[in-house]
Length: 203
Image 1 (cartoon, rainbow, N blue to C red):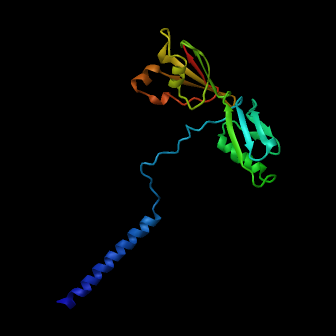
Image 2 (image 1 turned 180 degrees about the vertical axis):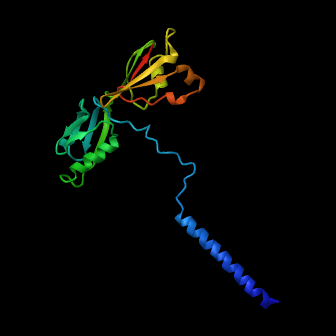
Image 3 (image 1 turned 60 degrees about the vertical axis):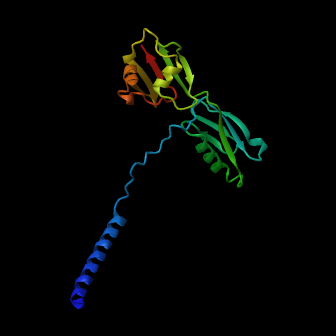
């Protein structure tokens, strides 16, 4: 009896090993699947704008403790590193860029870039709000937040016909915003994140 079962058992083991090997091969060659992993978000990173004042420090270099104004073209200059394009870059990005440019002059340097005054990162709210004007964005801000900072809509406003005007690279884009939709939790994609220079018009 025992001798009769041995070939069957051997065949079963061979089949199992073959299936295991095939499964391992498929796992190794299948495209990786990510489940429930959110896309990276950069909304919490402040991006430098023209008009901002930056503080640039090179450790142990007394002549390299600088305050620089970001010009209207989005750039500034510092000794040795030359022209630096700062617009829409974070302080961390500027730190790496300046470090790379200064490395050949100061091999063991330590650079720090900070935003001393974010005066250039402005949005504008005009029309039928309680406190129209220009507002500096010290953090990321959406349309609803900007309207709140502007004191909210007054009683004469047309909440369903609000517009956001954005000008970039010579092009003008108009976004429509319905205040009532957002209050009701509908069409939330209208509540876009604002960019420097955006104009909100409340008729």
